[in-house]
Image (cartoon, rainbow, N blue to C red; front, top):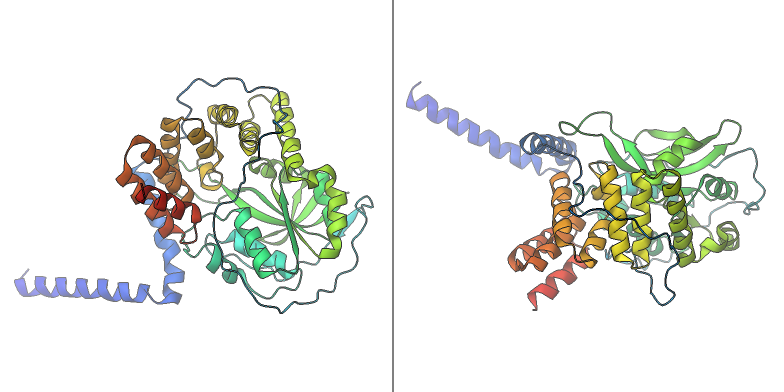
Length: 424
């Protein structure tokens, strides 16, 4: 081949790359191609750095105390992510047309609530899309992008926490009341639906195809429960990925719900407050709710001692009461019995427990593993940074904290960490 032809080929190749890069900046093109590029890069990472099982603990697991009553002098630890969201000072309040709440004890055989404004989720957007559908039930006007632009401004962000969604709802749908709790059950879901209050839950999800070699296909997903049929033993759920008005049997819902400590969110009208309190009973108080969830996870362990999710939930509930060493032991057992590859994309309790119990090696091992699966996880970056700081690697910690802020510029915990380290 002549030098002239080689030069022409190189020129055309460079021109094609430049044109491609320019086109990629066009929002419509970027939206269509970015997720495909990300999938390709994810698979390539899995080939270069093969995905193994979540690491088992470096210390021998010990039995967790059967005593589940927290010390009354311990202030419960908060679970907020530290994500700040700009508030909305708007005063336009729609007037929903809903009937009065049903009695919590009067449960019909079948209830179907009207699901308004179901949306097919955008890439990595099940949380905002599910929340959008929930708020539309109460005549909120908006869509998933109004939500995601504020709570996950980076489209590649694969996780949105319940706390972040509750924070958005409180600021942008302030005429509604919002609560979230753990330790729910099937009867509780039915009671709220019968009271005309849909329930948002976080549950397991299984992909149709692998994102890397040896992918276990497990992930998290939000579902909005809007109905039930006692005779068929099914719930009606709004699934932003697989479609509206899907039927899932009671047993499947509970099985999929368990890995997330049976977490649920309630959004309701102010006049329904007494109904919500009546249904929740003693679980209305957050500390009591956590205590009950702790006891429920302990009971599940007694029934199924090798249930990794029950051990994980026990760790999370112990963590709430700042019982860090016991929580770390519970997480040890969960890891020993086996957790999904993506578990630490969605739940970060082990990071807290190992950090506060002084187990820095385990902290770095788990955050390192989480970042192999999800390189832009702001939570894993934050705690990996704290692990490096504990090692004396200040520069590495600063790099991680900056990366966490790049992943989510509203992440106040990362800003605090950065300010703390830089001002030492």
